[in-house]
Length: 160
Ligand code: FES
Image (cartoon, helix red, strand yellow):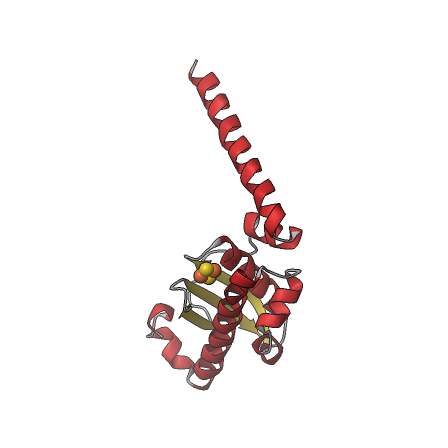
């Protein structure tokens, strides 16, 4: 009996999710939908080499953590309390930054993210700006900490 209820509930949830995804496909590109459903590298990072937390004009906040090896971003993670498109934009930003030289990652712009996402509706374009601003700030933090590396060990990333 319990197993049947679980199966019905799972089916119900799965149907609702499928309906939501189909609705999203009417508004967003398939790339946006895929990054929103399966975001690349969400989560935080212990002792990142660079970190930023930025709040956009919409009030949503994004965090990006980067690990740098030999001048390249070897790993990047993000967190956001923002909308679905902010998840897709942050996911694309960390994907684009990974394996790039720090200077090149710093140049990833709102337009680059929008292009990689195959566009966003006008009212969601600021989500890509939040992602590029947060990535740039994380790289700037890395460059600042690279000059004074000892600070990393007594300044938690969240306090920088
Ligand atoms: Fe705030 Fe998308 S609406 S980041």
